[in-house]
Length: 235
Image (tube, rainbow, N blue to C red; front, side, top):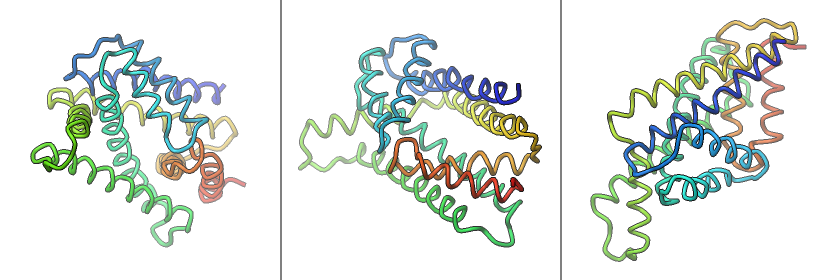
């Protein structure tokens, strides 16, 4: 029962992710209902689970071009913004929960996940700032076709200010449900976790999966999850 309840929490994040994406592209001339956005999110996350190197995001941009009448560059820009926002939230939660649980000494697996998460969050933020600056003063030697792609990516990457409150609200709800998913999953195996341990067990493996070497971090996530489970007291 608790495993199924946790799975329900996880799958309910898909309509919330669809609504968040719709708000991220509200400043673009898109067409598409919340249900259509949810279906596209589901399908490109499915592809992300079977294809390496985050190719699911590229597929998501392609589906957005077909279904929502936006350019692929604008769509990938909006996906990139969401990935950056999630990266900072995961990193913040990971640092807080790791400090509460393991302030004396961080195991190497946890330390590398934190370092990797920090690199990804800072790198993606720096890339966003670079595209923002490029939009202000693009070098003349760059071909017009590339300039158009840069401007489209930047246009999709920055949602309007008025859309930020619902975007942040959906993001908070998404990660609350993901944490509940792990809590109920572990509780289904007769192991109750404190809030800090539940957050730790949720975010550290997800940070490890951010490295796009294998489909959805397969292998890396399992090894990290094993280490984290041992740290929170699993036999």
